[in-house]
Image (cartoon, chains in turn yellow, brown):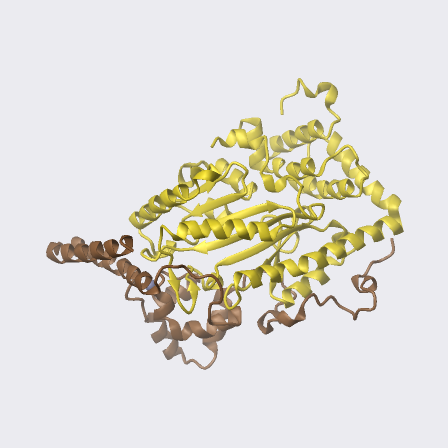
Length: 359
Length: 162
Ligand SMILES: [Zn+2]
């Protein structure tokens, strides 16, 4: 798998298709698993880690031949390559930043990624576009079943799958749905929604796992507990609140259109104006303005843009992506220029010069 | 621009958004104003250990270690990560309350591997055997090391012959 080639395209989960994909960007499930006959990663010797990686790598590739997996040795990637995978949500920040033998297997559509020697020996992740948890569960469950025929997972009859951290023990499952909720942010209702989610033990994080101030108004809702409920129950717990959140966001958008259509249209148009003409722009401002554009696309205020195209811009304007696309290492100031150039090119205002311009 | 309240939109429903209050967990309620994170394990544990423990009890507990991987309870509670699967057995009395605090439950419900748990437990023994073998080699006790190696092979064969 060539990372430079990946940079210009995007994973299936960003395509902006699938149920309720105007508000739900993606549905993701991950399972934490460990081998029974090795210490957890924190207590593993270098030799243990190397053996765990070798064994899991072989079994992961053998049991998923039809998926066309590519294996990346994360330990051998440079920091730009690792950051690039984090931006694409294919590995966690922890996996990028740690040390020693570790890797990740990824399918061509980037719907599945299997991280080896992260916090647990194996973290299986499946990501689908839109609100589609059932399909994600079906896929990840069968990946897990096939692996289980080949390897012995650390498992206890009473406690379930044993994980390095007791917060993941039992099912080892984390179910996350990523939603784009700009209207709830504008109308200042988002905190209230979060408080009620916390009460039912659901966690809320930003696009890259950050705290309450989420970049681009993207929020990931996920289960907090993993023990004492079945996988299906935990999935349902997350799935049950998603339609409620979608409904709130839609009502907030209706409200904004009804009460202040000119203001909303103005906001979207200004965002488009800045992004399609700026000469230098920060990542933060880009995310903020792209959020308005994404909402504008859904409300048909920007008929020339497609949802998938806007989703891609969120990822492709991240620092490591810009550097991969430019083919060189860029400092912050140069990245801001490259980002503005990239955005002008992709938002259609550079058409007269676009063909000749580097991006 | 006029203000917008979710409560105004939820026709005929009571104030505040209660998405599914049946599932409420007591321990999260007093954290409702902080951004949602995985429950802070060190915090939960520190709070739990502070209740009804003398400093002496705690330091005794801290020195307890796992015979399989060697992790001490102190290491576990400062890092929030276990060293091996056996730690769930070896620190079981402290773990019980911790699991209740985190998950509100102590027993797994859901998917189970098809392999026999007995064999899996025996495989966990390999962690101790490999560690002892490494120590035996380091101390030049080669006879002991080769005994251990035979034992490891035997378990490996049992596992693959399943
Ligand atoms: Zn141990």
